[in-house]
Length: 371
Image (cartoon, rainbow, N blue to C red; front, side, top):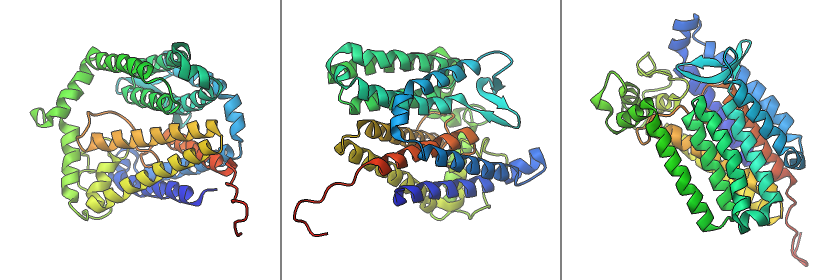
């Protein structure tokens, strides 16, 4: 396995465990009578994620290439299943989870992985068609549109943005015609704008993001508390475990806004370290993808590009939301936020990249070179 990539992934897992252990102590004690309730569950998720990653790493990339459509249909089935009354679990007006005993499954996380695997295979099989005419470009757009529709019905606007953005990025890197790309991208952006203004709560989030102090105890409350956490952190933080904002001031402190608590407790220095880990992780994945492309392993290259786009997109959106750079969206921070499905899928994605790296042949040394 690629050692730098493996160590970067493990470092982010460790950061997540420490951050969740600190951010969830009071919440777990108040709601479940155990301060380490979420920490113990997250440890179980880590074990399950590493076991799933070990299995995925053993699967050759050729298998993913041949079965991409199977995973896409499985993801579509789960996205439809979660919308059925009495089956999907409704939380805060969003029906995104399938209850599985003591745990829940979030189909939108699995859909991200399935779309990347399917689209990477499609770009290999239809490489010439995608670059030559509209038909090859619009066909995956139809599939993507159906996935986005199911995600919006839940509703899960954040996952929709990540899936659509990742797909467009992969198509652009595959070499589609610029005019085709810009035309469809323009239509997609208009559609996203229409979706924002079609729901009052999305408009409310947008206005709260531009001026959260206009409604400090209502729509702007969460962002204001997150900004206070950033401000209290200053350069070196208040120390691990000493956060004040996690004391029921900042809602969802151990999930979507865990980075705010981390910034409060470790300061600018700790936040910069995490940002640096993500930058190094994405750069290393892109390096693996570039190496696969040079070796003629196009499927592995597109797979790496898709995974890099998902990790970078989710990290940017999550940190941007918590710092007031972007409107509030419910997206997990890869490897760090509390959530079993997200953690398992992220580890499986990283395992696929490690498999691509393992399968790419080493470049031959020039004839006459010393060994």
